[in-house]
Image (tube, rainbow, N blue to C red; front, side, top):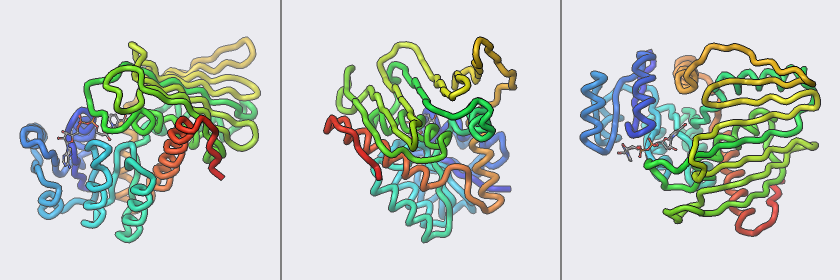
Length: 312
Ligand SMILES: NC(=O)c1ccc[n+]([C@@H]2O[C@H](COP(=O)([O-])OP(=O)(O)OC[C@H]3O[C@@H](n4cnc5c(N)ncnc54)[C@H](O)[C@@H]3O)[C@@H](O)[C@H]2O)c1
C-alpha cells in the first residue's frame, strides 16, 4: 500500500487528509501549527509532526502532498524530493516560473515525479468534455469561456488571483485544446481591500488556428460561480463545475446527460496514489504546472504593459 504524508492540514489540506484516509494511504500528517498536527493525528490515528524533516526521517513514506501556502511550495517540495518522495503540489506549483523550473530539475535528479493540483481535469464533466474534444462529434472547437467568481474568503492570499485561481482554468483550457497558447492578453486589477494582490483578472488566450479561451476570474462577485462554455462549430457545451451538470446544445435541442456525482478530489488523489504505486507519471506533469506558470506570468506582464504577450 502506498504511504502518503500530508503537509499542511488547513482549509484544503484537511480534505487531503480525509480522502487519503478513505483510500487507506494516509500514513502521517505534518502542520507547523502544533494544535492542528495534534488534532489530525488524534482524529485519524496516524503520527502527527510539526517538522517536515522529522516526518521524512521517521516515517517510511512513498509520497507527500503539499497543502501549505503557495509561497512555501518550493521549499517544502524541494525538501521532500531530496528525501526521495514523489510530490503532489497543490496549485500553484510555485510562485514563479524560475522556482517551477528548479522543482522540475530537482524531481529529475531525485528520479521522482511531481504533479500539480489541477483538480478540474478530474471533475467528471471536464473528463467527459475532453472525450467530446477527442471524438469530434460537435465539430471544430472554437471558444472556451470560463467564469470563476466569488467574494474573497478568509483563507490565505499570499498570491494574487491569477496564480491562485485563474491557473485552474488556464490548465483546463490547455488540456482541452491539447496545446499551450501562442498569445496572452490580460487586464487585472485590485478592487476590494486588501489591495496588495490583484483580485480580478480577465485573460484572453489565443491558441493555434482560431481557438480562443476567455477567462473571467474575480474575488468580487458575491455568489460563487464556477462555470464554462465550450463552443464548437456544431454545438455548445455548458458545464457547471460545482453541480457537475453538463448541457449539450445542438441546434434547437438541449441534452443533459445524467452522471453520478463524484468528488473530484477523490478522483484526483486516487490517480496520484495509482501513479505512485504503478511507478508512472500522473495525468498532470511538472511540465504542465510550469506551462501554467508561464501563461500566468504572461497574463500579469500583459496587464502591466497593456499589450499582448507572444509566447513563441
Ligand atoms: N485545488 C483546490 O481546489 C484548492 C482549494 C483550496 C486551496 N488549495 C491550495 O491548497 C494550499 C493550501 O491552502 P489552504 O487554503 O488550505 O491554506 P491554509 O492557510 O488554510 O492552510 C495551510 C496550512 O499549512 C500549514 N503550514 C504552513 N507552512 C507550513 C510548513 N512549512 N510546514 C507545515 N505546515 C505548514 C499552516 O499551519 C496551515 O494549517 C494552497 O496552495 C492553495 O492554493 C487548492
